[in-house]
Amino acid sequence: SLKTKVASIPLETCVYNASGPRTGSAQALSRISASKAGAVLAKSATLASQTGNPLPRTWHHDAEESHASMNSEGLPNLGIEYYIKTETIDEAISDTGKPYFVSISGKNTDDNMKMLDMIYEKIKTGEARIAGVELNLACPNIIGKPIIAYDFEQMDSVLKSICAMPMFTEAKIPLGVKMPPYFDGPHYDRAAAVLNKYSDVVKYVASINTIGNCLAIDTVAEMPAIRSKGGFAGLSGRAVKYTALANVKKMRELLVDDIDVVGVGGVYTGEDAFEMILCGASAVQVGTCHWNEGPKCFDRICKELEDLMAKKGYSSIEDFKGKLKEW
Ligand code: DHB
Image (cartoon, rainbow, N blue to C red; front, side):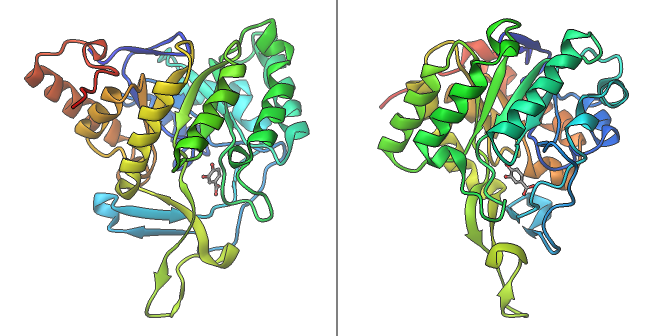
C-alpha cells in the first residue's frame, strides 16, 4: 500500500501534486482528485486575483521527458477567496474524501495573515473542507521580491507572526512550509533551526521549490527564452531531482521528528518517488511532470512505485522511509 500521513493527515497514496501547474482552477483540481493522487493542493494564492508576468513566461526542454522547464509566471491566480469557497472545494475534491490543501503566497506578511484569517473563518463555520495550509516562502518570480527563505531573519519573523495566530495555536490547523533549495551546509543548519523553533505549528516542510533565477537562451532569437526579470526564472523538471534529494535528506536529518518532509523536485517516475522516500520523505509532490503529462502521471507514478516495492518485497512505505544506507 502507498498509504502515508503528512502532518498527521492520512493520505491514501503518498503521491500528489505540487502547487503551481494545473492547480489554478476547480476544474483542474478535480482532475487531480479523480486520479490516484493522495491529496489535492491548490495554486499559491494572493489576497486579490492577478494575471502574473508578461508572456512568454514558461519554457520547456524536452517536455515529453520533463527534462528541464523554466517558469516566471509571477503568481497568476484567482485570489484566495476563490480557493477557499465551498463551490471550488466541492468541485475540486467532490466526494473523494481526499485532503485539500490551500497554498498562500502573499505579497507581505500582512496579506498572508489576512488570507489566514479568511481561511480560518471558513473552517470555523464548517463551510470549507480545508485540511491544511502550505505557506510558500520560496517564490523566485515576483519582481522586486527576494526569496523569503534565503533571508533567515525575515523567515523567522514571518513564521513568528504567522505561527502565533489562533487558527494554529488553538484550532491546530496544520501548517506546511514550501522551501527553496539550499546548496551549502550552513544554510541548511540555519533554515532547519528556524523551522524547529515553530514545530508546534509547522507540521511539514515541502522541499524544494524551483531553483530560482536560472537563465534559458533562445539561440535563434539570441534572447532569453522568458520575458520578465531579464529572463531569470525558476528551473524545474528532472534536472533538479539531485538538488531536491539532497534537500530532503538534509531536512530530514536536521528537523525534529514532528515535522514531516514532503519531497518535491524532478519526480517523474516511481523510482524517483522511491528515492525521495529513502531520503526521508513522507510523501512526494509532482510539479513539472504533472504540467507536461497531465493528471494521469499520478496513476502511472503510483503504479511504478507499487511495482518497485513489490519487487523489493516492501509492503508499506514505512519499510524503507528514511532508510537510505550509509557506506
Ligand atoms: C510562481 C513560481 C513559484 O516557484 C512559486 O513558488 C510561486 C509562484 C509563479 O511564478 O507563479
